[in-house]
Length: 147
Image 1: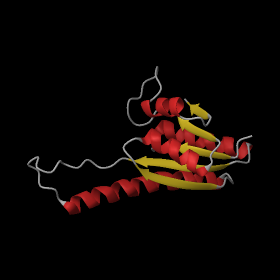
Image 2: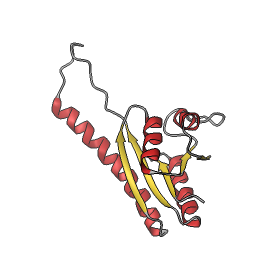
Image 3: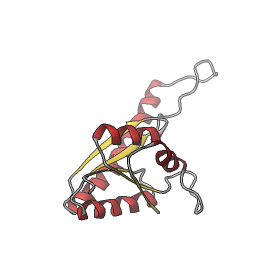
Image 4: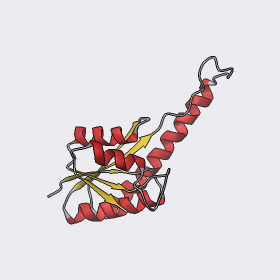
């Protein structure tokens, strides 16, 4: 039924559990998985705000974020490969992760988005996370939410 899953992950504990469940789901359905990580732009002081912008420090911040994203995806890839699931991964720099998730799923031809109910921010036992809620309300691709 499902052949290609997009699995967003931010490395949070709930997201890691969703990765494990997505791998098991993909294995049962002989599907492949593309792991996705949205890397936010590091904050940049506004020019003229009385702050000296250090280009080297800005570059280092980008490198740290990029390394963290690749570590998160490498861990997910290793788990999937161990289970015999074919994987790929995507890192996208965006200030709107939900849009990046939807755009990537559409561009890659994914037929299911498998994601955690919450990420690192705004975790609440009663409500869905804001990124998950936005994906659910803005995509036509089926979404499986792991709680």
